[in-house]
Length: 114
Image (tube, rainbow, N blue to C red; front, top):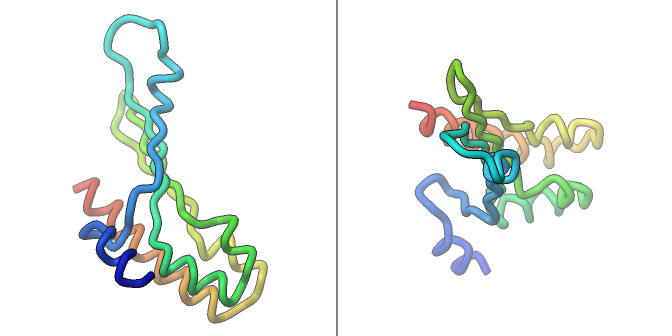
């Protein structure tokens, strides 16, 4: 499994599972240029597997969502940190994996924003 997943990962260490064009839905039938709004569902099954080993409920939070919202002042990118989802479970091993995941996602977001 590891070999298959590794071959499907992008340079960020993630794969895109789904892309939702919220802007297309919100502005359906309207004319003119409209702000773009996307929800990206990304992840790495190997990272998810490590979290789920320690906290099975982690599977309901992974893969992660990145929300990209074009507004008049700039583009806003938001992401809910996995560590905040797993903190209530008080499992140090899962929290460590979640923090590492958060750092990777934040690096990807920072790279995309640059």
